[in-house]
Length: 140
Image 1 (spheres, rainbow, N blue to C red):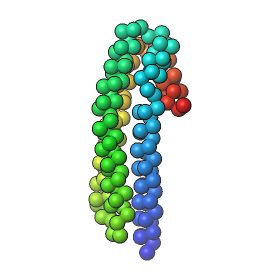
Image 2 (cartoon, helix red, strand yellow):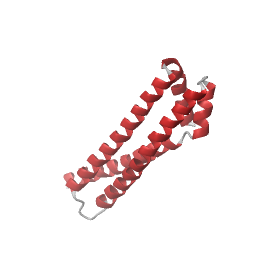
Image 3 (spheres, rainbow, N blue to C red):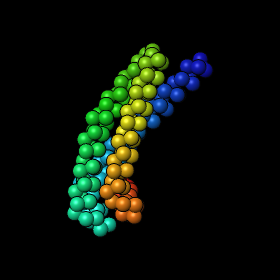
Image 4 (cartoon, rainbow, N blue to C red):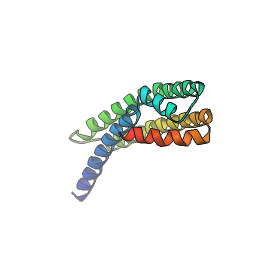
């Protein structure tokens, strides 16, 4: 009985953690639109060529991330569906969690690689200004 309660609480916690992770990823990517990106780049004094390159990098990274976000949502639904069964398959749940972690890792890799490309385009000082304003815009 104690095992049942323990696993029940564990999976309940994991389910809500996954739910908030999916929401957080969506919020991070959709929080800053193209106009905001453009205005941040203008504000820090980026050249027209730099602005064009950064927007291209940002757009390409979003195009790679969008299908992964959809995959993450599907996996989250698969997890929920399996978890809510009368007798959930623990191995299947762990497999889904592993897949979710892999997709999240892939999203993070794309984000980091895009930031590194943007850093090359802007240079260190402009990038640090950009990063500060970008983080502030994402919080709004």
